[in-house]
Image (cartoon, rainbow, N blue to C red; front, side):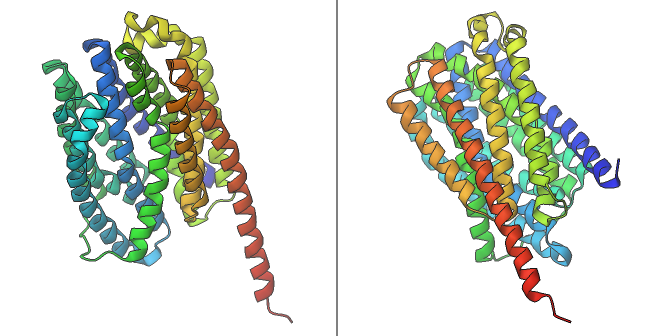
Amino acid sequence: MSQTRRAIAGGILLVGVATMLANAASYLLSMFAARLMSVPEYGALGAMLSVSIIGGTAALGIQAVAARRIASSGPGEDEERAAVVSLGLRLTALIAVVGLALSWPLAVLFDVPFAAVALTVLSVAASVMGFGALGLVQGNERHGHYGYAYAAIGCLRAAGGIVALFIHPDVTSACAGILVGSIAGTVAAVIIAGPSRPRLRLTPRLAREFAATTGSLVALYALSNVDLLLARIFLDGTGSGEYALGSLVAKIAFFLPYAVITVFFPKMSAGTMRHAFALATGLSAAIGAVATVGAAVLAGPLVWLIGGDKYAEFASLAWLFALEGSLFAVVQVILYAGFSSEARALGILTGCALICQVVVVSLWAHQSVSAIVICTSVIAAVLVVVGIVVELRRTKGRASGAETQGLVETPRG
């Protein structure tokens, strides 16, 4: 094995272990919640976790921008670090203010206590600086530091929620614990990444880059989570609780290959490895296939482990949720490939898919758990196919343009 391949394999292993540890903590939080809370109450918590994930795309956006800029910064790394920190501080304040303003209408829409929604948006705001720190170490390809920071964010957040559930098993208590854990995780991640001073002014280009990246991520994470929110609106309490359990299966499949894009994204951004997109897509698809087959074969034990006997009738649908999550994992690779060169088309396609999902589910496909997940999976599959075609054509066109430019600039003897 070459040195490059050995380094890639080692990076995927390190980040993979940290990702699995953090995600296992998150799944443990959901498992305790499913067992300690009633089915309708668990549905309410599932809605808040989806709101947290969708809102958290701003944090993922700053991580992606930080990683891309650091990976391609060269000697200007200190300036880029200062810009990222400054952006993170402003974003934290903005999310807190806007989120609190929107908490009341969201509480009414999803039939969830106002306090739970407010605590959820504050936990999103608290996580921004932690994910900015992740982006800094990701861009440097410091896989060990990334693993420690990622594990700290995920484990401390989940630990806060679990402790709160044991104190009082309701949605408001759980959200309060998650907020405390999110603050602790961010502090740990910033310490691990190392100190950086903020810059007083932000450049318009950085703001535009962040807005475009975050817009695409919002579309992806809304697309992969709004089905649960729609289930909360259109299904009864039991149905929304079952969908929350299925959403957990989807998230397991979605995050299983997360280490792949974490390791390959800096290489895409810096252009240091040919075929990085194809390798990342293929690895993510393979992991997703294994997850889907595993969910089909082991559906009964898996559902019992996650939620207990009260969700036994849901087992036949587990593989569909695993397929949905696996498809969205591939979509994520496609989007990050676009981020690496600041392409916008893939984000626009994802936004169109989101609109299609909301319209179709709201008007027609909302009668049952299976109707919503099948609709979402079909939309995700179409997006995967179209996205791969668009990205391959864009990459081919960019390569052809570079070759043409090279021919023009080659001096004649």
